Structure formats: C-alpha cells, structure tokens
Length: 65
Image 1 (tube, rainbow, N blue to C red):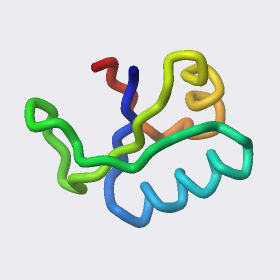
Image 2 (tube, rainbow, N blue to C red):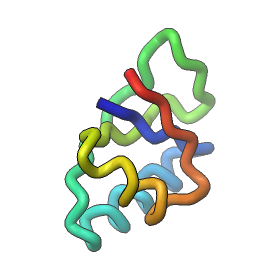
Image 3 (cartoon, rainbow, N blue to C red):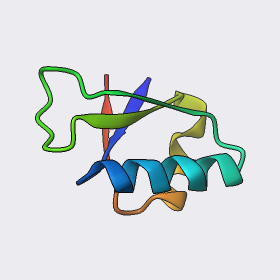
Image 4 (cartoon, rainbow, N blue to C red):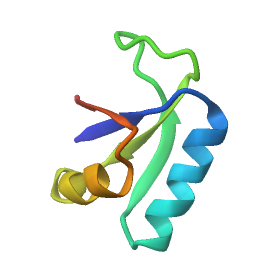
C-alpha cells in the first residue's frame, strides 16, 4: 500500500476529487505517526494504482507503507 502526502487539507480534498473523477480508488486517512506532515491527512492508494496516481497527482509525495 502507498500513501500520497500533500501540503494541506484542501490539496488532499482536490486530489481525492481528481482520483474519483479518474476512477482511482483512494481513501482519506491520517498520516502515519512515523511520517511527518503539516497537513495530517493523506490519501491511501493501492499498489495497482500507483502509476496512475503519479500521473494524476504529480505534486504528491508518495510513500510506501
């Protein structure tokens, strides 16, 4: 599983909307404690969608967890 990190909650919401528009399944969740993020929220992404996420959300920072 992967997570996509963003700068703020608005960016998370916009990214979630973009993913849903492109039929990419994501889930909003809290950022894991061992990963620092000012926002506190991230998108959980399945491994099969990782390349599509990278293309759809080029500004996201992607972590494998």
